[in-house]
Image 1: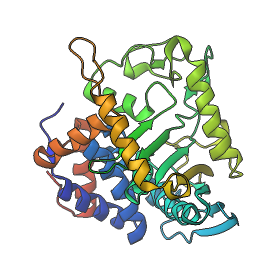
Image 2 (image 1 turned 120 degrees about the vertical axis):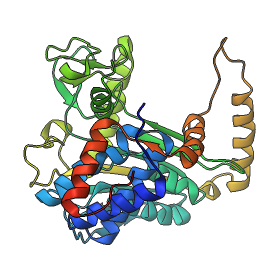
Image 3 (image 1 turned 30 degrees about the horizontal axis):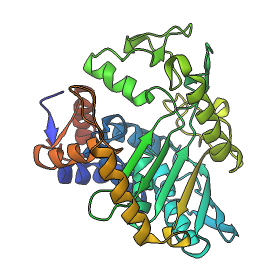
Length: 350
């Protein structure tokens, strides 16, 4: 993809330092860095460190609270609301995951709605945090309008991702992370930087006509191609949980991620669900069941020339590779890192 690579430790130190220089407090910088490195290590480059220049900009611009005082209100035995106080979305989502785990240990299931949050990057990062605590984690978030409806010709839903993670006995967790659009918008930006054509049926021009040219994309297509009503319906479910259950704006009401207004908080919502296996059959039986399920899945007959994989298999393999080879940086991100480094007086990580 590119010859510019950086090791994970150097990237982590650089991201945290840049966000600190932008005025973010230590917990905010650490959470944002943790989420970005999650994506970059697993090969989800659209939601990885290429977001650093954006986060630097919105911290400096005032959209994000640099020193948030988040508050959690428990509503019932298994539910609560986290007021994120306009924090970075990663800080809020990791905190909500912790609260949801606490609720689930008591009630079996814990659900936490997040209000007054912001862009949180890779949804899978927070589902994974719950799986690493021995739980099943489900996470979703809405965002500003960029995805047309099925047969629509204007932006309506956000990319509205859904992620889930389940622990396994001996290996990496089962990890599923998807946008309800055909691709996330940051994937379009990445392909534009790389000069690559988009896959078919993933994005549309100003008239709602699908295009592969990343430079003329005006909106994304919903997941499903000719059956895009499925992606649009899933996006609506995310909208209801993330926006309506938290009392926040709907996607058409949220300020655009890219500006021009980077000083006004966006009033976004997110939703986190944690399931404690001990509230059901027990962790031991769940792990044994995951062993059987994943063994059967991976031994399932593939099509000729193809490999059957479980959600997360590709990403975990890529993470092992990148721990050795480093993280590739697209040209636009490499240029932005040099600019940020010069402005902050910090060495670039490559």
